[in-house]
Length: 182
Image (cartoon, rainbow, N blue to C red; front, side, top):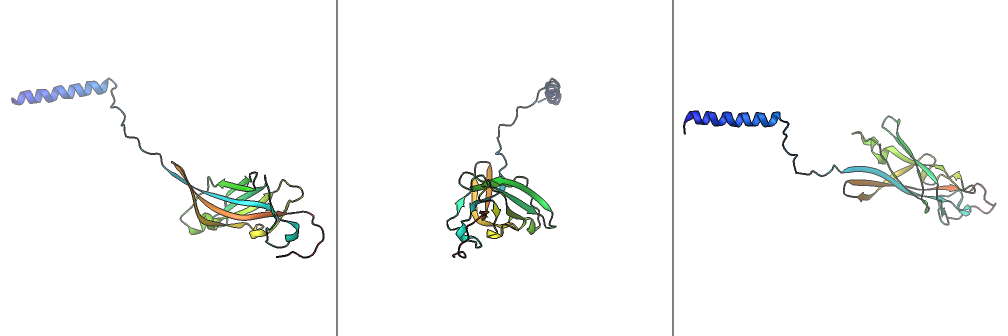
């Protein structure tokens, strides 16, 4: 092949490419669809009860009733003991609460892990006859979270679920009776 013909062919291809790009041509988008990034969240669940009068003064929940609409809070503190997360959750009609810790930030420091950093506390009870805080599971200082190897998984979502409590309110008035039975 003549060297002048090769140079001419290269020049024609170059001019065609420049003209195509100058007219706003852009290559088609890639057809490969990449899966969305899976997020892993932390969540807390537990139960809230009204402790029966005959168990007052103990940690027993025998005969206790679940409280619908009770409010509990999850408070997390970082390794410097500064509040890093606070959110209030409400129990469902069965006294169960489930709350995602959206916005909770972990750091490499092991004390910033939810098991070490977070506590569950009672906030309020909708029942006027059962609205005093009890200290069952150290709820006055904040009940520790437990890891029970529970996870919830969906396509693009995964939650590590920690357990708290059970927590309990106690009646504001109990008839005078004998000491609690265990």
